[in-house]
Amino acid sequence: MKKNNIQKNLSMKFHFVEETAETPRFTSDQITAIQCQKPVLGLTHNFYRYPARFSPQLARVVIEALTKPGDLVLDPFCGGATTLVEAAAMGRRAIGVDISPLAIFLAKVKTRPLDSQARSRIRSWAEESTDLTLRSPIESTEKQWRQLGYQKHLNSPNTWPIRKSLELLLGQLADLPGKHLREFARCAILRTGQWALDGRKRFPSANEFRIRFRKIVDEMLNGMADYVAATKKYGPTLGYPLCLHRSAEGLHMDDKLQDVGTPRLVLTSPPYPGVHMLYHRWQIGGGRETPAPFWIANKLDDNGESHYTFGNRAYHDQGVYFDCLRDCFESICEFSTSETIFAQIVGFSEPQRQLRRYLKTLSNLGFEEIIPIQVGHSKPRRIWREVPRRRWYAEQRRHLHSGREVLLFHRFTQHSA
Image (tube, rainbow, N blue to C red; front, side, top):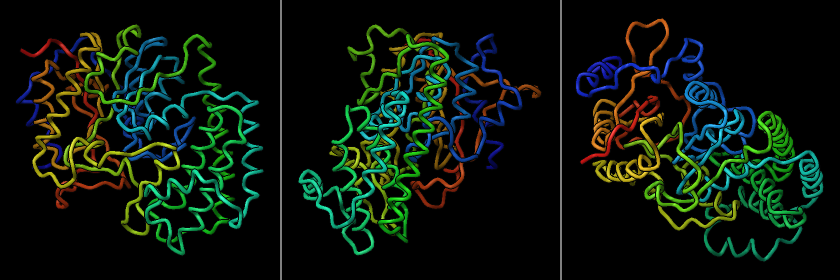
């Protein structure tokens, strides 16, 4: 069946909420922003290329259209923290949740402001630290990571200079005062390691690595300055986003959320059914996988791929996926009210079949879909977007739809029986 017929057929199977004052309405310019395919840039968004991150333009449009300053925005699968950064920059309170310690590390670095004095200190540290050579000794703690297997596939003649460069920089973090500054610098090292290793077949020299590191530090500091300026417009009382390392399942029972209020908007991108991305690994030299990002972020990775994706890429029946989806959203809706709008960006390896099941899973929990109004069109319709150049794995390679994703809107109306 043709792509443009998928929505038509599905609309005959599900009941949608009638148009109300709360129905999302978007102008043609806003639709263009939602469907934007430009590289992710601005503020702190480019601190790390997190897999399956969605565009800041999309987050900005949805947050602006459905919330006001001071409202609470929740992302229960926050990943690269796009929702959190945009919410904070627009004067909204924000909560981010993710089961990956790497994601929460990134979310905290991206959303904790650094003043001009701290930024100056990091810039000086970066210039001093890159004076080290490959003959310099490394700290014993870095050797322990190697013994634990976190430097897998980084010992070849082409990769060891990068590994040694990373070890040397990590060993210099103790020269920075305060955990916040050290975590920012660690993120810069992580971003440079990703540039040097992930998806590479030709690896840079140690000197190229050092030059790139200083450039990345400068770019990140400039982005942080822009983020600080944006958040200052709304005063210091707003606070920075709360970032929780945990599963979305059972979220409503978390003690840290008992007094935060009810989210006005849940804006998120959960794992995609039948589409599996390497959230927890880098690919080295054409396919070999390494857990190096966890080593650099100083986080342990005790879980396999299925822990992060609602199912292993070898699973052909997505029963496990939809069970996990149900359990998570059952908890999220307990944390919400009928006034909370749920906006989800989801991709599928088989849209016609999986979208139907996805909507049915939410419907069984008491969610009703809201089809957005697009100014200039006579009927509401879902918003689809193309996502070029993503590296992910469809469950069955013949499916070519995993480069498309849909923006779904729901409201929770009642608990399921």
